View 1 (cartoon, rainbow, N blue to C red):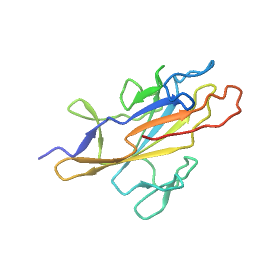
View 2 (tube, rainbow, N blue to C red):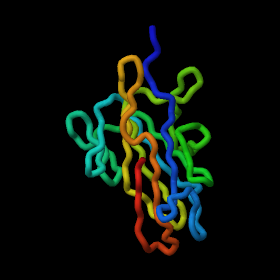
View 3 (cartoon, rainbow, N blue to C red):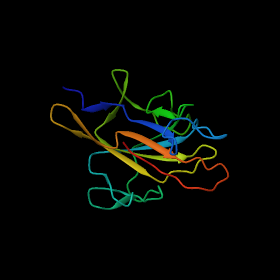
Length: 173
């Protein structure tokens, strides 16, 4: 029998300073340690709405815009922490111990089975505000290959606010 379709995990996050667009913090800030949570839902019947909620195939909200779950629960949850360059990907190197489920592996390579991955910043570095943006990616059966759609690369930028004042700007590419 053939192995199930999957996608080697190429899903990455890059925290940048919104003013400079660079992965270098301003002032006394640091981009290191920014935490992003990845929620994996098996199946391809989940999607993100314009309001930032996640809905199932029946249109029922499963995650509200504040990141709270209603009804369906994710099959796996992973938390990653960025390095000093504001970078993290879904690999053992960046997983936060004790807060993450095991990754899926095929032939020793971390992979994502068919389904939907939702990503959100869940802990901002000192001097930066927590982003409320939600990113979603679907891994679907593309026939002989895997079709990946949605926010495959997340570049999440916040302005350095230092004293808690100011605003933020987030961008997805």
